[in-house]
Every structure is written in C-alpha cells, then in structure tokens.
Length: 159
Ligand SMILES: CC(C)(COP(=O)(O)OP(=O)(O)OC[C@H]1O[C@@H](n2cnc3c(N)ncnc32)[C@H](O)[C@@H]1OP(=O)(O)O)[C@@H](O)C(=O)NCCC(=O)NCCS
Image (cartoon, rainbow, N blue to C red; front, side, top):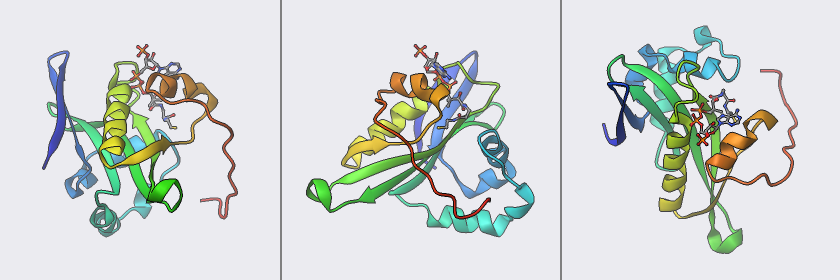
C-alpha cells in the first residue's frame, strides 16, 4: 500500500493513501453519508470489491486515515477524462470530497485537495473541475480554484 503523504497532528499520525478493499470494514461509507444519503445495506462486500477493482490511475479514491484509530477522516474521488479538444487534453473531475465532521477546520481538506491538484498536474491534466455548494466556494478558492460559472443538472432518477 503506497502512502503518498504522512503528517502528525496533536500526537496522532495521518496518512494519505488509495481507498482499498479493507476499508469496507472501516467507516468509509459513513463518511460518504456525511455528504449524501447512502444506504449501507445496499452496498454489499462484493459491490465494494467490484468498485475497488474498477479503480485505476485515471479513476482514484484518495483517503486520509488516522493511523492511531484506523478511522478514515477524509476522502476525494478523482476521474480523469481524455479529451479531443485542447490538443488531446485531459481534464480532472473531482467528486465526493468529505472531511469527517470531527476533523473539519484542521486543514485536512486543504491537504487532500492540494494532493489532488498535484496528482492532476502530474497526470498531465490542463484543468481540474468540480461542482460545489455556495457555502463551500471559499474553501475551494483557498485550494486554488476559481468560481467559473453555473452547475447544471438533470436527474434521471431520485436515487
Ligand atoms: C468542505 C470541507 C471538505 C472542507 O474541509 P476542511 O478540512 O474543514 O477544510 P480546511 O480545514 O482544510 O480549510 C481550508 C481553508 O478553507 C477554509 N474553509 C473551509 N471550509 C470553509 C467554509 N465552508 N467557508 C469558508 N471557509 C472555509 C478554512 O477556514 C481554511 O482557511 P485557511 O487556509 O485560510 O486557514 C468540509 O467542510 C466538508 O467535508 N464538508 C461537508 C461535505 C461537503 O460539503 N463537501 C464538499 C462537496 S463539494
């Protein structure tokens, strides 16, 4: 398991790494539940395993884990799209950014997004884009993003 980044905070050690299959028995699903509704009963171990097996260098889930408690305290999903425009350019899409409510305001979100931005850069993306609520605009500005228009959505299901 590659540890991309490690830091100590208040005598506890935090590591940034890829989501892995062992995280099924940790709190990843609960963490996602702080962002959106999630029915844990619907996510069987095999579903989680299939999801992990589909991940690759263009579709990653990065997490930060407290190594002293084994608790996952932050996550972000990255999807890198190949384009024809911009000279066969690549765009990094960021989804499902969550910091556990016990750790918000401690800089973990900024560390995670800083890593995501570095990753996108390393992968040759010419830009990174995401959607966010108005109340998170300042957070993303502090991570280097600029407000660049409107989000449009058309829901195909109520799930
Ligand atoms: C948004 C979220 C990821 C921020 O994570 P965090 O770890 O609390 O943020 P950080 O502590 O790294 O904050 C980084 C900077 O942004 C600022 N900031 C963070 N959230 C902010 C907010 N909602 N409004 C204004 N500023 C904010 C911090 O004050 C800090 O500023 P500084 O660098 O000048 O000290 C976290 O609040 C969260 O998980 N929210 C619920 C889920 C969610 O809405 N996710 C986003 C989906 S798009």
